[in-house]
Image (cartoon, rainbow, N blue to C red; front, side, top):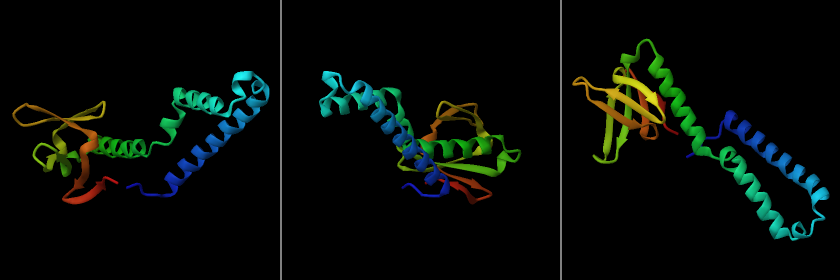
Length: 148
């Protein structure tokens, strides 16, 4: 579930303001280009506008609440990875295969790359864990960060 705080509200405010700017720009452009015979049909105009916005990535990028959660998760994990007392942290995941939560010690976290956490275990075996499966970060047994 998405939590609304001042940072999230600011993001949505600026996204809506940007969308309003796009609409006003389109209205101004409409006066210049709207006299073309194929743009006089409102359905064609709507489709053309959606194609332009979708191809620019504006719709998908600005209104994706999952991206915000992913960025917060990434920031918390990078902070733990760079922390001088990294050995005091534990990272809790949900393992879909075992259908249970698994906890890894953060001291085994070797690197974070392209949405995956790479853990090197005692026997030298590498374990790749998708970042989106992180449920909680614990510091000395207490919750330091929790997913949404």
